[in-house]
Image 1 (cartoon, rainbow, N blue to C red):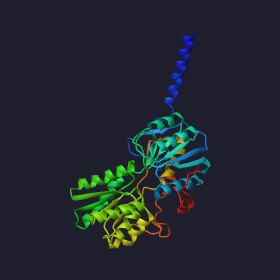
Image 2: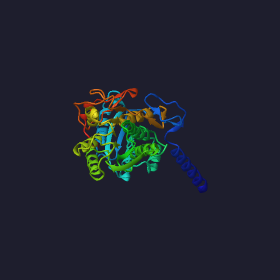
Image 3: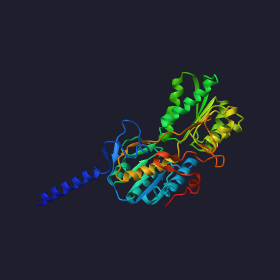
Image 4: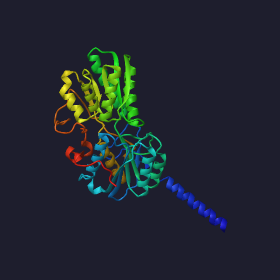
Length: 378
């Protein structure tokens, strides 16, 4: 009898374990809901479906690094979007924390929110790997985990991003086209990297260097780390100019206002510059393009957080979702910049200009974002 009881208990435990292991999203056939907004990354992207939960939902934003204007604006955007009438009634609670660049701290914060019973966790991963444990925990607890921007090297979670490899290639291709238009086929290129250890920095840099290596020109690549921050970038670009002299082009992942200021302060001739979507950078391109500042601005929008939040809520509602959601790259060059349209002379230089996603019904105004603060929501 005791032996039978033990066997029955063991079988029940095994069944429960198997049930827990099978929790989380089911892999299903596409297409997914609202494909204009939630576009699959490519033809090979698989689709997930979670069991529908009744709302409203508890949502947490687990940020990592917070030491630049993009991250600050992202946090403000999340708070502004949570108040948007389109989604406000679907979110009962929003919590925001920033854990710094320490991966264990971020993993601990995610685990804590899962244990608190939050329905969805949106995160910018501090590392592209090492998240297997919290992914399994989220699945067992039927929590929707959505990395965006700096995503994970896995297909086990739903993720939201722009094509970072393509962005790097486009920056480099623009610089090469502008240089060749001037008859320049060799020289020194300054690459300004982002925050070390992140998938975004890695993939953009791969794209940049692939293009220059494939060109066949005699290009000397000089790389500095700007952390996507204006002040840090200004210093490292100034130091690079002091050490290496004149550059033929600058390809910067972010901190673009710092690139411009360093060039100005050093009296460096205007050269082709590739950069992000900071308002001040676009102002400078518009002002100095006739003097030689031929710039391209491709925006990795802080508004991606709103798409990630919208995707999380959609998944909680039981909709079929792509595992990897592709957000189009918003591009502007010196040829098509227009005040009041894709930059604003009356907004701060460090404001990121791209926060509209018409296919998703997401349009967060500058004033609504700027009215928020970047502090954690405990």
